[in-house]
Image (cartoon, rainbow, N blue to C red; front, side, top):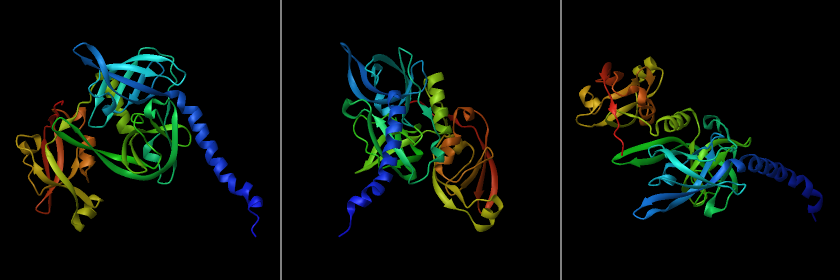
Length: 323
């Protein structure tokens, strides 16, 4: 008969190490994660609009959460892990990235340490901290089960896809949205945003792109985006062109919106966009990332493949209207 008792200490060692990491992340980050009770304006004053989580960006009260948590709200009350209740106002929200910034009235908060989601690897340990069902500092742990997922978002009549979303098997529950997804060093690498299915959750990555969105929300209360006016899908390039450009795909134009910048530039279905202002384009996400405030009402130079030949066209993207 096997001597299980003799093997037990050795078998428990990996679990002990795993537990130590999770406990350490929770201790470091839980004080930086708050519970939000959101309010909206009503005929009689203010009424409840929902709840969620947020994490501290700056000590003077700027918090990051999910746009859908505060959508339709004007403010509310933030509950800290140490029992304080701080009124907050909504600074700005960006439904097309599902990111929002709010500001608590009182300072003296502990900012979270930021990581870089672009450095994550599949299988890496992550810890989700939020406030499901209003329970402050709830912690779940798991691994990054996939990277590069896409999350469709809507604002008015506009559809956008949030690229490079993190998929994790750390359990997410109602109220977790807006909370922090952290790596094993307690650095925030994602904003918990949605349930992807049984046992799966999604988080908007914290990286250079999302930090630029957060900065715009803090400074201007909104995110200005340019609008090119094409719908498309990735398509392999002919071997000769792929060798010339050093990449194998471009964005095939499927539809051109009448009256848009793309229409004015003469783009048409069947064209394949391979470059925009000197930046490679292979997917719709590449165009989305490049259509930011600095492109609005300015000449944009596109290289496209038409009839198996490279051509250069110019467009002047307008600002994407707010919802």
